[in-house]
Image 1 (cartoon, one colour):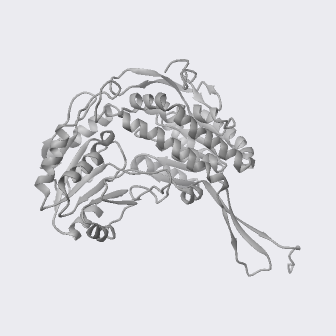
Image 2 (cartoon, rainbow, N blue to C red):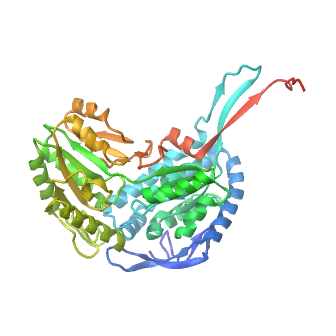
Image 3 (spheres, helix red, strand yellow):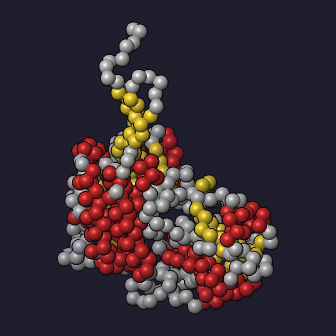
Length: 487
């Protein structure tokens, strides 16, 4: 965090438009959620900043698209190596700025490294087909860069959820406008600007524009932008999707989740509660894939609830920058108030508080709520906090009905007999199914997305999904001579 560190101090009070410049918006403090202390100041972009950035990006993109694939690949490989080289410093920022524990921070940086390496293969990946034709001609389809891509990323995994769109979009010949969440714009924005500049990315191809609603609306509506990659809440995603639809722009929406972990009869309770604890309490439950509903067969329900509660009571909570803890702070006051309100309302609606509770200050302890009705707010809503609601089921059909009753369809975990799990997997509507694993899982080379209110079916990750997301299909025909026409 010093002037001589890799990230340096040149970003203080600035936005990144190929160089660090003053944004027209009012600069703001970067706040450490565990302590409330300022870690520095960042500039903020307004609509004029964004529109000017989009114009610069469109000009830079035309030359970048002509760059030989090997050169684009080399930039991505250098970026991957730089993440590894600067892991310690960037991890420290993730811990302090996002409130993540050390393991979570390390996961983010290693994932950024792997995403860049995966993306480095995209420039040379086949991107077309030879088509049949009823005419005497050759007929082809080919994928061409979309142009300017806007990436809007959230606070919870600020580095992963930025880089997973930024890296493949750049690799495929696009320019990128990145709007990180203002609460985590150093680890989710400044770090990307520094890494890619150091890796040799030409100026203007990546611009980092933290800001509020005005900046968010502008990165969607700027005329040069052709694709929007949004990760965030369902409510915000609806607004982004509505604007993109009106403007006839492609929009990839990865939204919220209220993910179910189904514990089948005969499942070993100890490992099951370990999986459930990780699924609900990793990063304080602030993950779209967090286990938000534990569906446990009635034959092992009581034992599961008690063992899960015992795990909750033994998980340390505190400041991950100064203590060895399992859970850190909630990101800000608004989110803490919302989580505590849902815990209170859940109990008023009949849920039994078995462990944890509302907590104090910046921290909410790991919480277990049992005996919830299907209409309980802790059962129906995405809490985005360290709360594990547990309910029971009797039959496989009932379990499938409970899973599918949610408006979300992002991730489902099923623990127990594999044959039974496969039967259940065929009955549920979700973007991801993990058998004998909890609901939180991702890799750099796999497609990622959800159904229903969890997204519009778009995918990130893996060559096929990334090429689909960040390129356009163009049809090309060719004859040996000019074609005859009746006019």
